[in-house]
Length: 365
Image 1 (tube, one colour):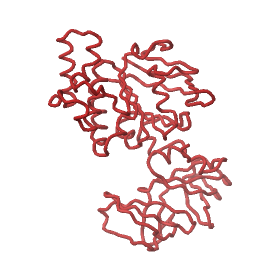
Image 2: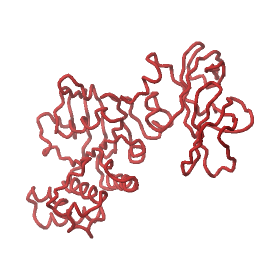
Image 3: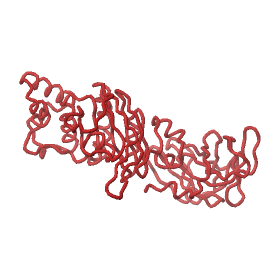
Image 4: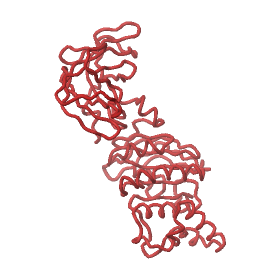
């Protein structure tokens, strides 16, 4: 079964370094997503794994075997492209059974593989249709069936859902994970869509500017990101800069702008340290009355988001924060209302203030 290991992978195109010093191991039957903004090197990395491009430096191992010099068609993998590259002159059946046919499998085996794939993907009823007669979702399902019919245990997915409508993407992302797990495959999935990555992955590799920022489970990346970039890119967060002015054994006092104060769990910081406080919008509380660890502000904007209202609040510190309140809550606030924003210590993430500046660290490029 395929375990994939990348050792010190670097890929250059002339003077441009697309990926640099990448080290990662994907376990057998694991679903790993490579997540990052456009141009961060995600697709380059997958093309190096597949053998479409050779690494400038480093080594690729699949199932413990070094892949140097081994062409794509001998790496025993299925590849699903972003642009749904079906053969336009072949119908669904012929597209899906293309690999068994070129391998000259016996007709009985070809028929069995084809029917299994079409049944698995609910495509049997449209097997005579041609690509131009299919919806985008059906086309991508066909492309997935063609990749799976190779009988490979390693599946590479390069932005497989980005060309589809929102509703179809939502349906197919869960179908993808189900198929990978039911078939016992190892999957490496490239996307810039954080929700897509969170919903399908066992682990996520976060990339920026050709390098790995961090690797962890979706839950850990969301609840306990190790870096400010991840806290910003995975989900949404509020960022407030300050300086620790007092500490005891358990609690730190952070002074933010306009001499306002927020208390935090100490987290190893000491007096005088510059810090960045990070909190998810759903972890803030809005109320009319003053409370412990709260800062006064004014609501400047309200957006209905379906399951919740998003309140934009300008604090007395001149920071603006987003606060998400479920629509089931009876308490409603209005634009220009004065409110208290409560910061619960257990929901505050604290990071050292970056020397290059917060905005520079949060930049996608």
